[in-house]
Image 1: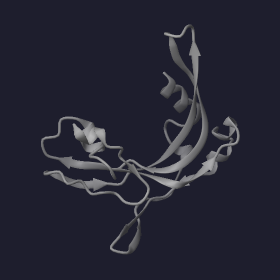
Image 2: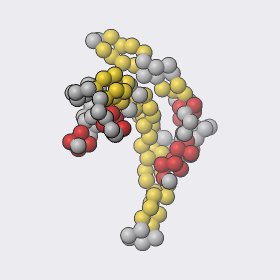
Image 3: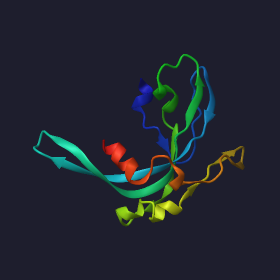
Image 4: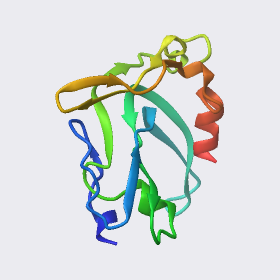
Length: 146
């Protein structure tokens, strides 16, 4: 379980897992969304998340081990320790929550993944517009709150 005790996110390299039976690492480009959390409180003991206020969007790599012998949990393939996730140092600041809507500035963002190996850069995925995600904008925020 020590793999869960290490923060998995870096901004420079994917640290290939040193786990016996780990094979086929897959880069999974995603958008990261940094939000403020708005709480509703009936009392000091009864707090619940009421809403999320989007503040920034950045490129994220949710890298996974596609094949791991003896694996019983998804988390074993998703978080093998430091360097198993990546986030861009650059982000897009959202001045207002309306920028994270179908008609907002985020609707113009696309995501393309590149991999650098042995000094060469390779395009890993085709460009995908964020607006094509199945769960994005307000439905995503509502799902997370729920």
